[in-house]
Amino acid sequence: MSVFERYLSPWVAACIVVGIALGHLFPAAFGAIGDAEIAQVNLPVAVLVWLMIVPMLVKIDFSALREVGRHWRGIGVTLFVNWAVKPFSMALLGWLFIGHLFRPWLPADQIESYIAGLILLAAAPCTAMVFVWSHLTRGEPHFTLSQVALNDAIMLVAFAPIVGLLLGLSAIVVPWNTLLLSVGLYIVVPVIVAQLLRRAVLAAGGEAALANLLARLQPLSMSALLATLVLLFGFQGERILAQPLIIALLAVPILIQVYFNSGLAYLLNRASGEAHCVAGPSALIGASNFFELAVAAAISLFGLQSGAALATVVGVLVEVPVMLSVVWIVNRSQPWYERGLRP
Image (cartoon, rainbow, N blue to C red):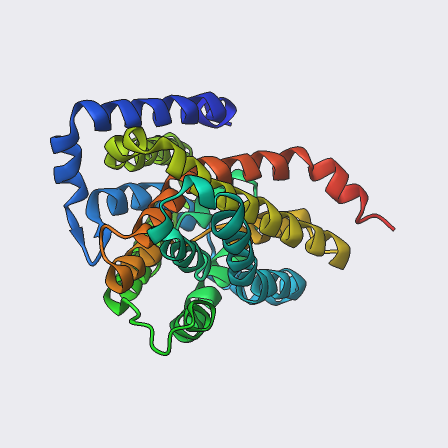
């Protein structure tokens, strides 16, 4: 375990503080970096995501993908949580907290927009970062790749109907350019690059050379994760300091949603007898969000300055630290989980 992984919590806290401070001190610089995007996909962040996930994808042996079918229970649990629970639980939480409990402290004209943004955030599962979460929980990499690919295929047909149903809209403008570009940048291209690299290294030096390469890449991967945190909080440093109460209130239903859905997936996997190496990534995939798509959809439907756009941005800020806390819970609870699997 690297020094980054061993002391990940203090590193994350430091990166959040540094990101907010730098975003406040150098807003123009972070604004310029934030504007380097295509179809709401930030290119510097995309490069960092590549550095994070390519080492995880290099580990995957495609010839072993045929064995994923034995984890059908984990696949079923994740699909159930992602598509039958998560969007609807977020709609309920948004209605309860934003529409009622927190209404006195929020701008009245933005209440419905905030709830819409939360629903957009929950309506699509994460595409790329789950490879990092899976790695940190020692998850089964073939299961993770197969589950992400399956979710992406479902998202192409299910995102618009689910969002339309929950928002009461007859037509949803799906930001296809963002969706397809994200899938291409975060899944298709990295998988191809990683597999070409894997084959080249194995051909040159065998398994020993591959293990040596992965050991050298791992610190780079964790450094990219921390740099991503600095950027994400730096992009929003001014907004965080300008309206901290609104951002804190919007974060509450997001936090509850993440812990509820990850816990539900984790417990359902345990009840079904699935292995911990599948239950971990299943819980994390079941709770994480595809924030690039959510931000793009919120902007296209409600506008850049809308409450919906702000709610999806809060999702971006919450995503990494809260998912790392779920990773910690999954790892610490492994002995308890596996005791329940014994006859």
